[in-house]
Length: 506
Image 1 (cartoon, rainbow, N blue to C red):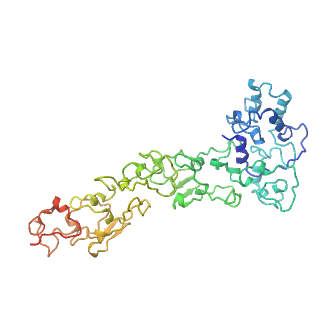
Image 2: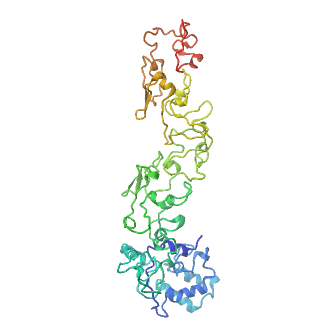
Image 3: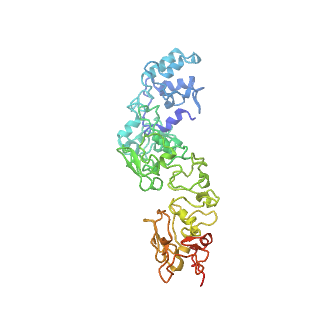
């Protein structure tokens, strides 16, 4: 874990370090820069510095010194029933004799004065303390960040401080001893880096440090979206839900005092909307047929079944790993979720087997609509998949790739020059050889109508003249051995609906 001082130095301050401090502090003034920094360096740095400081407290910077200990208590703030943790630690046996009585009194005086960084100068003593009402972050926000961004502003930070966002061209610093903004804001882009307000690395998002902003509301939802999780190996970018400035400057809708939510439709979906009154999302990544399609900000953590059923309704059977390489076999967890929640359905395990999605052996089709009636009919030969769908070759994936089946009627459906078609709105077929025989009672069947079809559904029983008007179809004259009355025999099913009219010539 990085020392708290380094994290806070780059993550919690709301603007540039605009503290035009000078050496005007009195010799005995209890400030960090005049006397406390040297005292802590001499007595504390042996244990309280580096990547893993003892007790979680680091003494190698001002922000570290006023930061929190491992239990989350500010080191320089007294509690209701106990002294400040820094002073309390000096009373422990393992710290006995670490400082002289005079040095302890100096630390106590500094803490009593609210642990200021400097003892005097242009700015108030609390200008560098994020907790202070006088902090430079609060000041800059109240001014719309103009002193940080406009070199010509009357209070421009760049007048005194190097490393700021705006510096008057060709003008020397009026306070050469003032600290550079980048002495605290060490991340890329200095005080204009996203981490200045939002944190660094994997935690580049709200909430701010509770050590310095204990009154901020608890916010776990940002971490659920922006940090790696069981759902995604990498967090979603801020631009998924917010307008994100390219330069980092707090202008326009950025840092305007209002949280603007603008969805990236490529990820969240084109129906994605946000209701600021309810703090809820609609039509987003979460609305995929699950139990909680309208989550509100601050709701309990989501599970797989909250966004989509696991497995979804009418989903092909079989192990999830047959098609989705990021899921485990039973769909209860993701093993390497790089593609999850990216705005599209990613399929492919490299097997190239149709049965991976559609079933195996004698059950190789989805359980939706009238698939069974076509793939395993009781009175005809099975209809090939390519009659109604474009079937990929080898390990290639289906060309639709949109989470729905594409229908393209060819081959048998257009036998005899027919112009077979499918209407996806009404889910009906029309003009097909298979169903639109002479005298048919159901020439344009609906896909979801799975009622058992009779002979008359597709052609007259018997067909109109010149066909013989007899239902004794099993006689030797025409269909010997293929029918038994109006029922197909086992032999007849092998040739029924194959594109040819089979009859025995008299």
